[in-house]
Length: 355
Image (cartoon, rainbow, N blue to C red; front, side):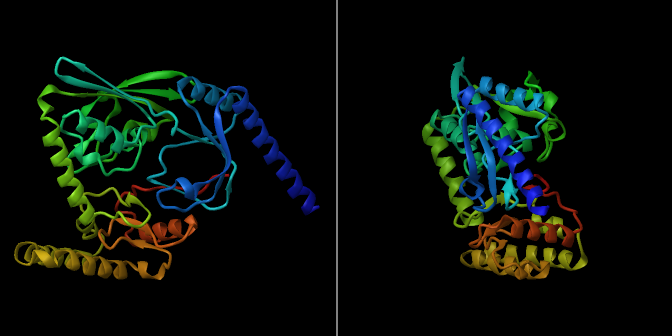
């Protein structure tokens, strides 16, 4: 009886798989069956997605959304997998990805630079594009691995640069396939927040304006980008698979100091010794930071996790030390959240409770 039930469930899943495949083939929409998340994820871990759908434009996306709406089929929209941890195992919920919706255009209006970017355009790509054109303001975004859609969704910023600073408007699609426009003031940006986190809207395209006063020439912008990139390489993880900042915090040590008295004392000592090393023994500052990170990691109890841990360059970055199992990373993050009493907002997105 149990075997028959399992066979029935399997038949239903295969029917759904074929049903979605047929829709994609009928409309010439690209898709991948049994997509391995670890191939795309920046953490190099995760399960298998049965239906990975890759619309090439707004029209194809509308077709997919309307199909799922009519069929009452739940689905996910995921960008560059640079900030997302998806569970292990087989995921039967269809996933829409914007990798092929990646058109980037610009034009000049007087001395102002106007840019249109599809949701699938990577943040480093638009940053490099602006740098090449000689306009300053986006150099700090060069090291953010996410997509424009994800960057607007979470109000991405780094090294004094932010997408929202230059944003004019955003084109979105609702769950029925209708297209709407949101002006910047309607998006209600705040630190790592936007209105899109509390509604069911899909970001399609973003429009930016960089003013003439930001034009400094390519020599200036390239030099500034080089300086930021060099600094980032010293203090942010580049070698091991990771998802960037684990928590939405400007200063992880300061925020931890609010969790318990021991972390408050650690924060004060850290400030004193950082000042000493930075001002009087600069060549030892990086070794000192690594020692402090190991000490914090031990206090937080993270040494019990074998395959995942924090970077030796920054405490605020989860790294993969050689596993393809996302569930262990999810377990570590939940352990850490409990340890800090959920007092610091999680920036990495966990997708666990999904069929």
